[in-house]
Length: 381
Image (cartoon, rainbow, N blue to C red; front, side, top):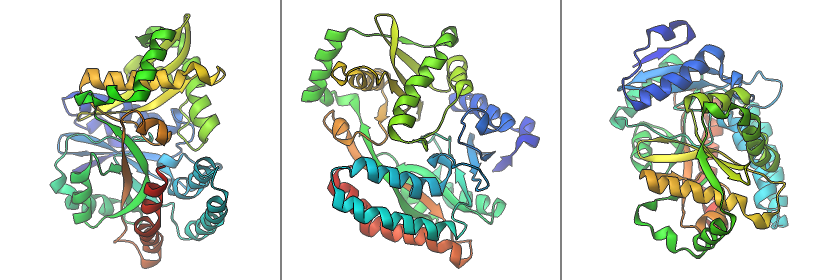
């Protein structure tokens, strides 16, 4: 195992396979220019770890920022700021529960931020909402943990995006290496291989909508550079304006790189020659996930643009033979279209830290077991 920084990047032996080529394209740009050159609210340091013929991004969080970083690279943004927004969004029709939860999260935030909670290092964090894992020998989990904590001894170590439907082997290996599971969110998984989702009533309705609307889909490439601002507008409207500005704020350079280099495979939905929706995904080891989804929210809801975008993603997963991790949100919508809910965890190792800095993570682990997971499953969020 070896760590590479900007100063030593030229010496990194990039693996000669698909995942290695992808990592070289995206990560070399992020290391050389800094992640914030492509994601406005990712003001963090990025190193690379080479191990077992794979290259993984290592993200060092940064508390010295003038405005919050995205929740994908900030524990405080994830567990405090975004949680408050989730309470507002998901418990809007449960005022009593919302009234109880909000002051508790505010109080927790004040305590955590006083205990250097933000000082962490992430393994395999690609700065998107859902990280995917390449083929890797997870019997090396303890060796990996010792290596990273020796290099970054004053930081808690976090492995994000581990869900119980797809990542049980990784989960068990990290538990065996001393990590503790902290609730992240509930995600929704679709395995289209059986075709069973086609029998869902809502999917049948979506097909009727598709036939009536007759959208034209096409793969977007560097020849579509003029559409970059429109793609960003559609994404921003959904993820930043509707949900939270703590989601990754991909900028124009990021979307141009997606068009030029395929960092995210982008498909555009055209209705009467106008780009009205975008479905963007990437894949690892038989699983795909869409970090870029957007549609024209100025159009009436009855036009069902979001339904058409999500239908495209499930069709692409079926065509390519992938399992689709639909990430979180729109829980009822996804359940009705054949997705299976799965609890997602962040696995955290803090055993090398002073006891006062272990305490926040152990508290969150207790809340995970006793409150958060049972509540999420009961409310079906």
